[in-house]
Image 1 (tube, one colour):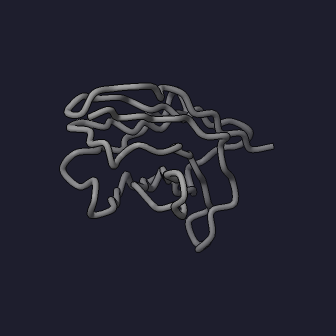
Image 2 (image 1 turned 120 degrees about the horizontal axis):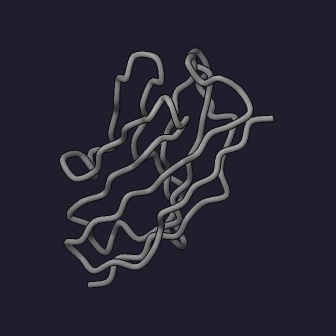
Length: 119
């Protein structure tokens, strides 16, 4: 079955950087969209970034454009989220998600990794 395993979260000062990883297994993902979402305490889960595994097309939430970069490593079946110029408001649990390209809903989710940005 599909498994998504996030890693790379932690505590960082404002202005710092972190790189999150999502190791995907259980099938080939060439016809999937891989994404990162986040959920802060007391808030709804929100979209952060996505990448089409086949085309490499990327999409970002306005709040992270220019600061975060999503990428993939085909050989490692891993998706990354490079987060630069971090702000305290980026503090959240970050989740990796996957869906077949035509679907609107993300079917597969990782367990999440905590990112805390101190001011």
